[in-house]
Image (cartoon, rainbow, N blue to C red; front, side, top):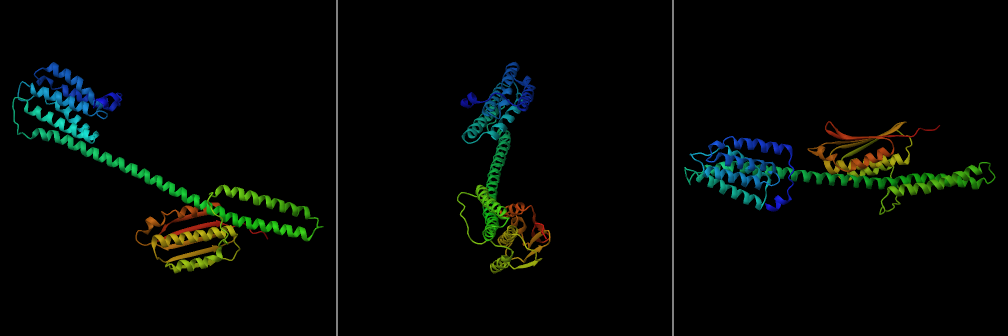
Length: 378
């Protein structure tokens, strides 16, 4: 305790100072019952203010209050000494029980119990078998220990919640990073293919008509196309992880949805596919729609099990609407939308300035994406 006294910060909050002042006034209200009132009053005025540091050094006010109480009881001229002195003992007992742990709590508890018991048998009326001192000591001590237990549990729960939140945020960032890597790779494949085709066609036209007046324009198209490819690779390389390996497989499109549905159906998910509209869809948007359907079907199979699922694609003049509707089962609603796949779907939809809704509708979980299509030039 002495080391804590040397290192304690003696500045105290106003609430603690006010509590110490009130308890000191209550303790001093009954000092007239003591054998030496002025001495006991002086002791109370010295001991009472120590309660202001009951949170930092709980042993100091505890033993000080117990010793003053012991002196007043031992020197009491009648059957009872100043009873209001015990208010300070109660507050100090509770504070020590609530804010001390380990060996310090055992020492403070045992020492204060001995002092309270000695004070009860030191007066004129001695009854060694009286259990009342143990009751009046045990009540505030038990309440204090329970308060400490609740405080430690709340603190541990807060730390655990903070750790879980940090892990969830890290997982979300990791999922978004991986999805950006995949989108960057797929975007490179789609756009690079189209730009490369444009460059090749412009070069072929230039070589087949060497005397054409459009030759300078064709050369300009070739140069601009090659420069665009270089800048595209540089820009997308910033988005991709250093260890992200290139994938040379052809990217899926809307025509690949049939085989995807067959694969998922073979895995146990009863899924139906409905496609309406026959407008041509750009490769990038078609790839985004394929990945959204793939992720939605995977989530349904993983979280809800073999539930009836429908996939509907509506290709209109202005937009491509993708809807995946899965029947909910049991508590699947609480987990089907908690996966990291929704993050990837939002990334893809945002890339094409679209809108995504994912959530329960009645007894179904619905993923609905709207992807705007470029205006057709006639």
